[in-house]
Length: 139
Ligand code: HEC
Image 1 (spheres, rainbow, N blue to C red):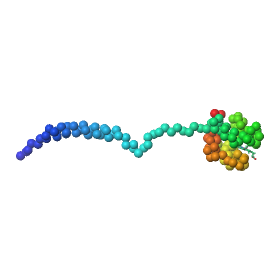
Image 2 (image 1 turned 120 degrees about the horizontal axis):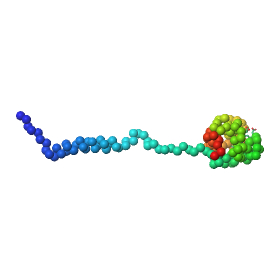
Image 3 (image 1 turned 45 degrees about the vertical axis):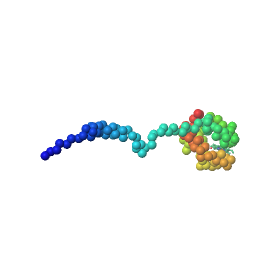
Image 4 (image 1 turned 90 degrees about the vertical axis):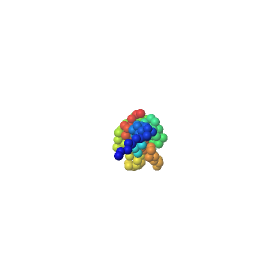
């Protein structure tokens, strides 16, 4: 004894649209950006290398040339690019660790510089280091 089972047209309509609703839901959820726990990539501009004209020369003029001008102290003239870079023992392009000037301002060769008992700040030392590492260019 079978009883015929008929869905009312109302339910039939719901069942017909159901696959469509499911597919749309999946597509919609697929489009949501859950972020994946990652931060969006942001372009990080590297800090520009210090230059002779904007950074190093003004610093030398302020802290060094009172003594190191016109070959005065230790025969070292830091007032022009040509004179400052004329001796690779003092400034070795590309190699701050092998530059006596860096050793002097860091104090690994005594007497340390500046000779007046003060010292350069960590930022100023880094600036000179970075400029030499970048090739001690006339820029
Ligand atoms: C108050 C004067 C004075 C100031 C300021 C000064 N110097 Fe000197 N500098 C000297 C004297 C004096 C010597 C020689 C020291 C010695 O070896 O007996 C010297 C030596 C040096 C040498 C060694 C040179 C060589 O042939 O090996 C370097 C490099 C140097 N100074 C770099 C600097 C730098 C860089 C600054 C600035 C951050 C500076 N000096 C500031 C007086 C000064």
